[in-house]
Image (cartoon, rainbow, N blue to C red; front, side, top):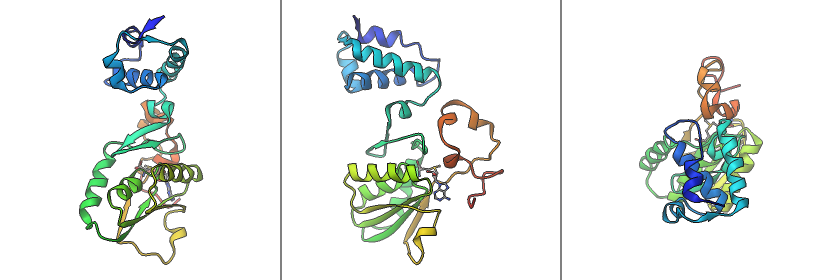
Length: 217
Ligand SMILES: C[S@@+](CC[C@H](N)C(=O)[O-])C[C@H]1O[C@@H](n2cnc3c(N)ncnc32)[C@H](O)[C@@H]1O
């Protein structure tokens, strides 16, 4: 039998600025509790099933898999999003794009488009902040479309619509007051693609041709 504090001490993840946070997120998920539970009850015994799940999570993390893919979720803006390896894990930097978009238009009715929505992060954050806006979210990858739609439904964001589309292809004749996008923009041979967490994310979400600026393929 092991207690929370000892399991965290023994987690032995590769040295990184997020190693302790990663271990806490994985143990909290294995226990079905919040991180604050771990801090409040460090002497609690971890049931053997949760300890086994934690060990399995740690093994995957040691292999480099991002915590968000291991847990299948990631916080973005004020939303908890399901995430999956078919698309990008939403980044904190992208919240700046949401902030900028919110400042560009008043909170009155408007049609807004998110091109390359992935998990739906930008579109759903905007839809949650601006109930009067009608937000359309498109992605070319069908699994990403399904993922964004599951997030939309779970968050009850009925002012958002998720569509399969190669950029504007399914939007003929539609007009938008605001178009926002965090498209793929990395060059195919960029060495960062084979490093760290990014190794696990799909080329379809990251790579834009030889020089990182070809997004029409
Ligand atoms: C960098 S990811 C951004 C995902 C999400 N917007 C975010 O910020 O977390 C780019 C997204 O664009 C999508 N994409 C790539 N090419 C596309 C295309 N031709 N048409 C529509 N979406 C595309 C990818 O599938 C991926 O989900």
